[in-house]
Length: 275
Image (cartoon, rainbow, N blue to C red):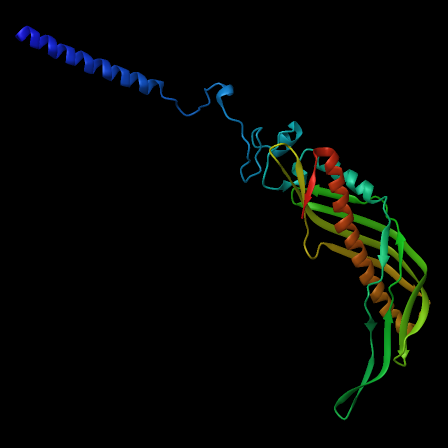
Protein backbone atom coordinates (compact mmCIF):
# COMPACT_ATOMS: atom_id res chain seq x y z
CA UNK A 1 0.00 0.00 0.00
CA UNK A 2 2.72 2.39 0.89
CA UNK A 3 4.51 1.72 -2.38
CA UNK A 4 1.28 2.26 -4.35
CA UNK A 5 0.60 5.46 -2.44
CA UNK A 6 4.13 6.62 -3.07
CA UNK A 7 3.74 5.97 -6.78
CA UNK A 8 0.49 7.95 -6.80
CA UNK A 9 2.16 10.81 -4.96
CA UNK A 10 5.09 10.75 -7.38
CA UNK A 11 2.70 10.87 -10.32
CA UNK A 12 0.94 13.91 -8.92
CA UNK A 13 4.28 15.62 -8.36
CA UNK A 14 5.34 14.82 -11.91
CA UNK A 15 2.12 16.25 -13.29
CA UNK A 16 2.57 19.43 -11.33
CA UNK A 17 6.16 19.65 -12.49
CA UNK A 18 5.18 19.21 -16.13
CA UNK A 19 2.45 21.87 -15.77
CA UNK A 20 4.89 24.33 -14.29
CA UNK A 21 7.31 23.63 -17.12
CA UNK A 22 4.59 24.29 -19.70
CA UNK A 23 3.64 27.57 -18.03
CA UNK A 24 7.29 28.62 -17.96
CA UNK A 25 7.67 27.86 -21.68
CA UNK A 26 4.50 29.81 -22.46
CA UNK A 27 5.87 32.79 -20.63
CA UNK A 28 9.10 32.57 -22.58
CA UNK A 29 7.19 32.36 -25.87
CA UNK A 30 4.98 35.39 -25.04
CA UNK A 31 5.63 38.22 -27.57
CA UNK A 32 7.74 41.01 -26.19
CA UNK A 33 7.59 44.73 -27.17
CA UNK A 34 9.70 45.64 -30.18
CA UNK A 35 13.19 46.75 -29.33
CA UNK A 36 16.12 48.03 -31.31
CA UNK A 37 17.35 44.42 -31.64
CA UNK A 38 14.22 43.22 -33.37
CA UNK A 39 14.52 42.74 -37.15
CA UNK A 40 13.35 45.72 -39.22
CA UNK A 41 10.71 43.59 -40.94
CA UNK A 42 8.85 43.19 -37.66
CA UNK A 43 8.58 46.93 -36.99
CA UNK A 44 5.55 48.93 -38.10
CA UNK A 45 6.10 52.01 -40.34
CA UNK A 46 5.33 55.43 -38.94
CA UNK A 47 2.21 56.99 -40.51
CA UNK A 48 1.80 60.15 -38.45
CA UNK A 49 4.32 62.72 -37.36
CA UNK A 50 4.73 64.18 -33.89
CA UNK A 51 3.92 67.83 -33.34
CA UNK A 52 7.57 68.75 -33.79
CA UNK A 53 7.32 68.09 -37.52
CA UNK A 54 9.38 64.92 -37.32
CA UNK A 55 9.49 62.55 -40.24
CA UNK A 56 9.67 58.85 -40.82
CA UNK A 57 13.34 59.26 -41.66
CA UNK A 58 14.51 60.28 -38.22
CA UNK A 59 12.90 63.62 -37.33
CA UNK A 60 14.49 65.76 -40.06
CA UNK A 61 11.68 67.27 -42.17
CA UNK A 62 14.04 68.50 -44.88
CA UNK A 63 15.70 65.09 -45.22
CA UNK A 64 12.34 63.37 -45.18
CA UNK A 65 11.00 65.70 -47.85
CA UNK A 66 13.96 64.99 -50.07
CA UNK A 67 13.41 61.27 -49.66
CA UNK A 68 9.74 61.66 -50.54
CA UNK A 69 8.42 60.12 -47.34
CA UNK A 70 7.67 63.22 -45.26
CA UNK A 71 4.49 62.71 -43.26
CA UNK A 72 4.32 65.87 -41.16
CA UNK A 73 0.71 66.63 -40.27
CA UNK A 74 1.65 69.82 -38.38
CA UNK A 75 2.77 72.70 -40.65
CA UNK A 76 6.51 73.19 -40.91
CA UNK A 77 8.13 76.37 -42.33
CA UNK A 78 8.50 76.20 -46.09
CA UNK A 79 12.21 76.96 -45.62
CA UNK A 80 12.54 73.69 -43.73
CA UNK A 81 11.39 71.71 -46.78
CA UNK A 82 14.26 70.69 -49.06
CA UNK A 83 12.59 72.17 -52.15
CA UNK A 84 11.24 75.29 -50.41
CA UNK A 85 13.82 77.80 -51.67
CA UNK A 86 13.56 76.62 -55.27
CA UNK A 87 9.75 76.71 -55.10
CA UNK A 88 9.74 80.28 -53.80
CA UNK A 89 12.25 81.42 -56.44
CA UNK A 90 10.10 79.99 -59.23
CA UNK A 91 6.96 81.56 -57.78
CA UNK A 92 8.63 85.00 -57.62
CA UNK A 93 9.86 84.63 -61.21
CA UNK A 94 6.38 83.72 -62.43
CA UNK A 95 4.70 86.52 -60.49
CA UNK A 96 6.96 89.12 -62.14
CA UNK A 97 5.58 88.09 -65.54
CA UNK A 98 2.10 89.25 -64.56
CA UNK A 99 0.68 92.76 -64.80
CA UNK A 100 0.00 94.68 -61.61
CA UNK A 101 -3.47 96.25 -61.73
CA UNK A 102 -3.57 99.70 -60.13
CA UNK A 103 -7.05 101.06 -59.42
CA UNK A 104 -8.03 104.01 -57.27
CA UNK A 105 -10.15 103.01 -54.32
CA UNK A 106 -13.87 103.66 -54.56
CA UNK A 107 -13.58 106.38 -51.97
CA UNK A 108 -14.09 110.12 -51.76
CA UNK A 109 -11.23 112.15 -50.29
CA UNK A 110 -12.36 115.43 -48.86
CA UNK A 111 -11.12 118.53 -47.11
CA UNK A 112 -14.22 120.66 -46.89
CA UNK A 113 -13.90 124.10 -45.33
CA UNK A 114 -16.10 125.20 -42.41
CA UNK A 115 -16.68 128.26 -40.27
CA UNK A 116 -18.38 128.63 -36.93
CA UNK A 117 -21.51 130.74 -37.09
CA UNK A 118 -23.36 131.30 -33.82
CA UNK A 119 -21.97 128.07 -32.43
CA UNK A 120 -22.86 126.05 -35.49
CA UNK A 121 -20.47 124.49 -38.01
CA UNK A 122 -21.28 125.82 -41.44
CA UNK A 123 -19.60 124.53 -44.60
CA UNK A 124 -18.33 127.26 -46.85
CA UNK A 125 -16.51 125.31 -49.52
CA UNK A 126 -16.30 121.72 -50.79
CA UNK A 127 -12.87 120.32 -51.64
CA UNK A 128 -13.19 116.71 -52.71
CA UNK A 129 -11.53 114.22 -55.00
CA UNK A 130 -12.59 110.83 -56.30
CA UNK A 131 -11.35 108.55 -59.05
CA UNK A 132 -12.00 104.93 -59.94
CA UNK A 133 -9.64 104.87 -62.91
CA UNK A 134 -6.89 102.33 -63.17
CA UNK A 135 -3.89 101.23 -65.17
CA UNK A 136 -1.44 98.35 -65.36
CA UNK A 137 2.29 98.19 -64.84
CA UNK A 138 4.96 95.55 -64.50
CA UNK A 139 7.54 94.87 -61.82
CA UNK A 140 10.96 93.28 -62.00
CA UNK A 141 11.65 89.97 -60.31
CA UNK A 142 11.82 90.85 -56.60
CA UNK A 143 14.45 89.71 -54.15
CA UNK A 144 13.37 87.56 -51.23
CA UNK A 145 14.69 85.82 -48.16
CA UNK A 146 13.02 82.64 -46.94
CA UNK A 147 13.94 81.43 -43.47
CA UNK A 148 12.20 79.37 -40.83
CA UNK A 149 10.98 82.66 -39.35
CA UNK A 150 9.15 83.54 -42.56
CA UNK A 151 9.29 85.14 -46.01
CA UNK A 152 10.39 88.70 -46.78
CA UNK A 153 9.95 90.03 -50.32
CA UNK A 154 11.64 93.30 -51.30
CA UNK A 155 10.64 95.10 -54.49
CA UNK A 156 12.19 98.31 -55.81
CA UNK A 157 10.29 100.13 -58.55
CA UNK A 158 12.12 103.05 -60.10
CA UNK A 159 9.08 104.64 -61.77
CA UNK A 160 5.34 104.15 -62.21
CA UNK A 161 3.67 106.49 -64.67
CA UNK A 162 0.20 106.65 -66.17
CA UNK A 163 -1.68 109.32 -68.10
CA UNK A 164 -5.25 109.76 -69.26
CA UNK A 165 -6.88 108.83 -65.97
CA UNK A 166 -10.27 110.26 -65.16
CA UNK A 167 -11.39 111.74 -61.87
CA UNK A 168 -13.90 114.16 -60.46
CA UNK A 169 -13.55 116.86 -57.89
CA UNK A 170 -15.33 119.59 -56.02
CA UNK A 171 -13.60 122.88 -55.44
CA UNK A 172 -15.69 125.64 -53.97
CA UNK A 173 -19.23 124.83 -55.07
CA UNK A 174 -20.38 121.43 -53.84
CA UNK A 175 -20.83 120.06 -57.33
CA UNK A 176 -18.55 117.61 -59.10
CA UNK A 177 -16.55 118.51 -62.18
CA UNK A 178 -14.65 116.03 -64.32
CA UNK A 179 -10.93 116.14 -64.89
CA UNK A 180 -8.26 114.13 -66.66
CA UNK A 181 -5.07 113.50 -64.74
CA UNK A 182 -1.80 111.66 -64.73
CA UNK A 183 0.04 109.87 -61.94
CA UNK A 184 3.79 109.55 -61.61
CA UNK A 185 5.54 107.77 -58.74
CA UNK A 186 9.28 107.34 -58.41
CA UNK A 187 11.50 105.31 -56.09
CA UNK A 188 8.76 103.03 -54.83
CA UNK A 189 9.97 100.39 -52.37
CA UNK A 190 7.80 97.53 -51.21
CA UNK A 191 8.57 95.16 -48.33
CA UNK A 192 6.13 92.29 -47.92
CA UNK A 193 6.15 89.62 -45.22
CA UNK A 194 4.36 86.31 -44.84
CA UNK A 195 4.86 82.95 -43.15
CA UNK A 196 4.42 80.18 -45.73
CA UNK A 197 4.42 76.65 -44.35
CA UNK A 198 3.72 73.17 -45.64
CA UNK A 199 2.21 69.91 -44.46
CA UNK A 200 2.46 66.47 -46.02
CA UNK A 201 0.00 63.63 -46.06
CA UNK A 202 1.02 60.03 -45.40
CA UNK A 203 1.04 59.57 -49.19
CA UNK A 204 3.52 62.44 -49.60
CA UNK A 205 1.17 65.09 -51.10
CA UNK A 206 1.85 68.58 -49.79
CA UNK A 207 -0.47 71.37 -48.72
CA UNK A 208 0.69 74.99 -48.71
CA UNK A 209 -0.38 77.26 -45.84
CA UNK A 210 -0.03 81.03 -46.27
CA UNK A 211 -0.16 83.14 -43.11
CA UNK A 212 0.23 86.88 -43.00
CA UNK A 213 -0.31 89.65 -40.49
CA UNK A 214 -2.45 92.74 -40.95
CA UNK A 215 0.71 94.87 -41.18
CA UNK A 216 2.30 92.54 -43.70
CA UNK A 217 3.36 95.20 -46.23
CA UNK A 218 5.05 98.57 -46.16
CA UNK A 219 5.25 100.85 -49.18
CA UNK A 220 7.48 103.92 -49.36
CA UNK A 221 7.27 106.42 -52.22
CA UNK A 222 10.17 108.71 -52.98
CA UNK A 223 8.13 111.19 -55.01
CA UNK A 224 4.51 111.37 -56.13
CA UNK A 225 3.19 113.80 -58.71
CA UNK A 226 -0.39 114.27 -59.83
CA UNK A 227 -0.56 115.98 -63.18
CA UNK A 228 -3.65 117.91 -64.25
CA UNK A 229 -5.26 118.97 -60.96
CA UNK A 230 -5.27 122.27 -59.14
CA UNK A 231 -3.14 122.78 -56.07
CA UNK A 232 -6.11 122.61 -53.72
CA UNK A 233 -6.87 119.11 -54.99
CA UNK A 234 -3.27 117.95 -55.26
CA UNK A 235 -2.96 116.73 -51.66
CA UNK A 236 -6.22 114.78 -51.84
CA UNK A 237 -5.19 113.22 -55.15
CA UNK A 238 -1.85 112.20 -53.68
CA UNK A 239 -3.55 110.64 -50.66
CA UNK A 240 -5.78 108.71 -53.04
CA UNK A 241 -2.79 107.51 -55.07
CA UNK A 242 -0.86 106.45 -51.97
CA UNK A 243 -3.72 104.41 -50.58
CA UNK A 244 -4.36 102.85 -53.97
CA UNK A 245 -0.73 101.82 -54.53
CA UNK A 246 -0.64 100.29 -51.04
CA UNK A 247 -3.80 98.29 -51.71
CA UNK A 248 -2.63 97.34 -55.19
CA UNK A 249 0.77 96.02 -54.11
CA UNK A 250 -0.64 94.36 -51.01
CA UNK A 251 -3.08 92.47 -53.20
CA UNK A 252 -0.35 91.62 -55.69
CA UNK A 253 2.01 90.07 -53.17
CA UNK A 254 -0.61 88.67 -50.84
CA UNK A 255 -2.68 87.02 -53.56
CA UNK A 256 -0.52 86.62 -56.65
CA UNK A 257 2.62 85.38 -54.91
CA UNK A 258 0.58 82.88 -52.93
CA UNK A 259 -1.24 81.61 -56.01
CA UNK A 260 2.01 81.24 -57.94
CA UNK A 261 3.52 79.26 -55.07
CA UNK A 262 0.50 76.95 -55.10
CA UNK A 263 0.97 76.33 -58.81
CA UNK A 264 4.63 75.48 -58.27
CA UNK A 265 3.78 73.12 -55.43
CA UNK A 266 1.51 71.06 -57.68
CA UNK A 267 4.43 70.21 -59.92
CA UNK A 268 6.86 69.74 -57.05
CA UNK A 269 4.91 67.66 -54.53
CA UNK A 270 1.34 67.37 -55.77
CA UNK A 271 0.35 70.34 -53.69
CA UNK A 272 -2.91 71.90 -52.67
CA UNK A 273 -3.78 74.97 -50.64
CA UNK A 274 -5.15 75.83 -47.25
CA UNK A 275 -5.54 79.35 -45.94
